[in-house]
Image 1 (cartoon, one colour):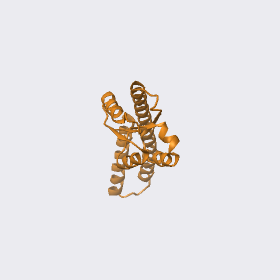
Image 2 (cartoon, one colour; image 1 turned 90 degrees about the vertical axis):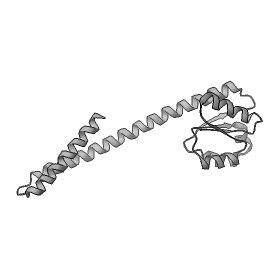
Image 3 (spheres, helix red, strand yellow; image 1 turned 135 degrees about the horizontal axis):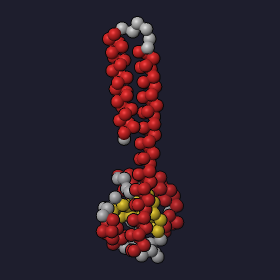
Image 4 (cartoon, one colour; image 1 turned 90 degrees about the horizontal axis):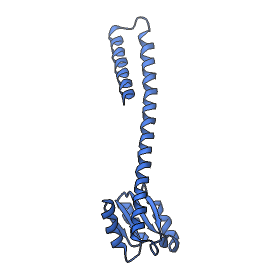
Length: 161
């Protein structure tokens, strides 16, 4: 979803053009207070912000920027920006957000895999040490072996993915 923030009389037309060009639902806020309300209610992929509002309402701008969350901000001067540029800048922002989101997910995935592998290695080492202790009762030895087997299976699955 896209949030368009502008007092421009062309706001509704701009929102409709963005929806048609991107296929994403677009909501129009005519002022910063309305934008903050909408940002509190919903997460947005991008926020297209009229520079005029940032310059004329600095305190409200700060509050709005604090509520952007993961929305990718795009700053435009609607007094001189045509519809074509609005669509182009929005598409570009959506693509950048998508790339950054993909890279962040990949980094988190790799970090989790690394941490899990470290934990599994520690588990396997502990199992080997426990199984090497003399006079371990057979039932306990079998449980340790089962844990060892499950840990090895998990490690293989992590390496395959």
